[in-house]
Amino acid sequence: AQSVTQLGSHVSVSEGALVLLRCNYSSSVPPYLFWYVQYPNQGLQLLLKYTSAATLVKGINGFEAEFKKSETSFHLTKPSAHMSDAAEYFCAVMRGGSGTYKYIFGTGTRLKVLA
Amino acid sequence: DSGVTQTPKHLITATGQRVTLRCSPRSGDLSVYWYQQSLDQGLQFLIQYYNGEERAKGNILERFSAQQFPDLHSELNLSSLELGDSALYFCASSVTDSSSYEQYFGPGTRLTVT
Image (cartoon, rainbow over all chains, first blue to last red; front, top):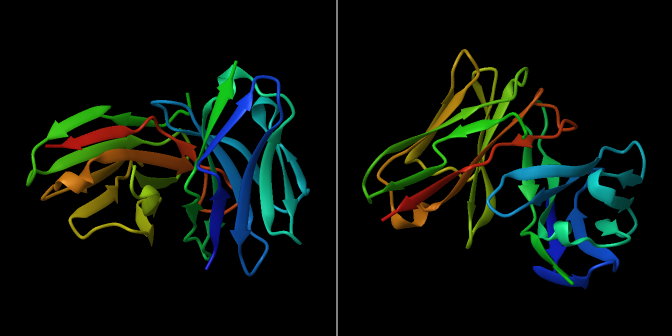
C-alpha cells in the first residue's frame, strides 16, 4: 500500500536559513507526489507536484522538491526561509486507479521561522 | 482564493444531532473530495464523487454520508454526532479524477460538537 512518512512534526529555522522538510514514500510503482501548505485557519494550498516528468520540481514561493527513487524520498527545500513561510506542510501520495484516486497525506510538519 | 467554497465556516451543535456541510467546487471541476482533519487523526480522506457518482471511499463512518448534485455541488451529512466528530472538514475539487491533477481545497468547515 502506498503511504508517506514525514520526519519531524515540528521544524524550526532562522529567517534566511535553509528549509528542509523530509518526506519518504512507500510505493511499489512510481507514485504521484505532492506537497501542500496550510496556513493558520486556512485550507490546503498546492506547493508543487511530481508526476514523473522531471525529478527536480519547482513550486510556488521559492520551494522545490527532488524526487529520489533510490532513497524513496521527496524532500521539500527552500534556500532562504521567510517569516511568511511559517505554516504546516503536508506531503501526499496519490493512490488508486481506474478513476478511484485519493490522497494519502503524511502527518504534517509544522515549520516555525525564528527572527 | 482556491475557488472552492464551503458553508458554513463554523458549526456548533450538540451530540446526537445531524448537520449538513456544503461545498461548491471550482468552476469546471467535476470531482469533489471530502476530508476530515483532527488533532489525533490528522488529515483523513473520507469520500470522492465524480460527476455525481461516488468514486472512492476512505475512512468514512456509516453515520456520515455524502452526495454530489447535478450542478456539481456536494453535501456531507453527519448524523448521530459524537464529541469525537469535532474537526475541520475540508472539501477539495479537481478537474477530473486523474491522479496527476492537483486538488484545490476549500477553507473548511469547523465543526464543534458539545
